[in-house]
Amino acid sequence: MENIETLWQDHSFYSIKEKESLINKVQFAKALMKFYNSISLPVEAQVKPASDDTKLEFLKFVGSDNYSEEKYKQYFPEEKPGSKVDRNISFVDLAPTLLSLAGVSKPDYMQGNAFLGDNIEPEPEYVHMNRGRMDERIDMSRAVRDKKYRYIRNYMPFRIYLQHLAYLFNAASAQSWEDLFYEGKLNAVQSVPFQTKPVEELYDTENDPWEVKNLAGDPAYKDVLERMRKENYRWMAEIKDVGLIPETQYLKRASAGSMYDYMRSGACPFDELLKAAELATSPGKGEIDRYVEYLQNKDAAIRYWGATGLLIHKENATSAIPDLKKAGGEEDASAATLIAETLFQLGEKDAAAPIYIRILTDPSYGLSDRNFALNSIDAINFRTPGIEAAIKQCYDSQIDVLQGFAKYNAYDALMSEYLLKRWKLID
Image (cartoon, rainbow, N blue to C red; front, side, top):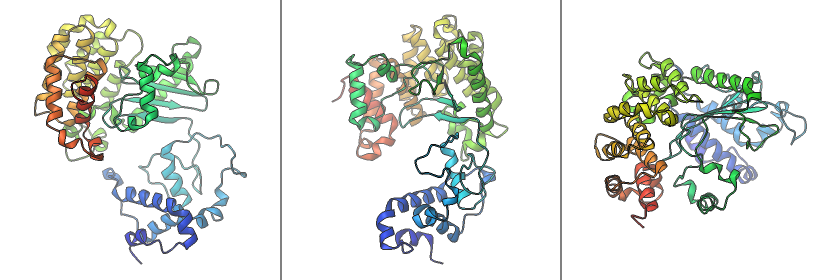
């Protein structure tokens, strides 16, 4: 049979009319197959690649109306087009659903639940969501949704919702929104994206579909809050959530392997990590003594969560200033950055500045390390002559990469450029 790569170039199995009407579907199928062939799977999921016959069948299924119109009509979820389907669905359900429609069994390692085809799975009670790094901007949130409520846990509540992403803010709508905020022309609701976040959010999506009124602090919803909170914890434990470890630490931990495998290995203190993250982001006054203990842990990610807990609960962390200063030589960039940010927030700017400068100028630190520190500097708008010089050095050494589309991958250079422009140190 003709190689599938050739078929991608010559869509000879389509009529002229099909080529004209289905070109977008064909390209979508090509993209799916490219991803399918290139994805890095965990060791237990490395199976024999699909044959060209299977791939072609999949391409035809995705790209041809002849395949979806009649043959698959029996799988329509409702009789009439445009009907609403009351089922909890997540993006991860797409892959097993496509396999179900194509008559292929879902592998054991695949997440998601098929909602169409011969292998429909039971509707899940919850849908889980996450937010992580967005290009050069760092954040971490997890969410749980049932048919009525959405619960959000913000693991970096000290970062605003709508951070300034270089690529996103090419859009006039995003830039104008930010401009209006700084001009003081937005009302309270419109201004929320530019403010820091609460640790927990809970919304009644039936009565508040725009999720404006946070019910997390309302005693009337205590049972709902606790139920959703427990589900979030359970899910993070089930999937061995890699977000519990800052991205700055990935290379040291996984080396030539994958973080997927590392999180499931004996080398990862997963249970301790999850408990530390939960404690660090607990609402209320926090547990300052425990956070200080975490700063001295042998694991860098635990130390990171110790710094996180102190930063989130900074109003009660004055007693930890000596311990924070003692930890100022922290080697890990993410933990060191949050130690510096907490010191800054507690009024100890002279102790904070050298930590930032070290991360930005020490050649042993890499792109993700510098980017993490630059995110923090921007969030608190921390300017000293030494910090300005360190950022200018980072910018000057990479100015050549800030050209064309490739610049959007140079995260530390992008952040350096943004800060220098914000401070009017460059045009």
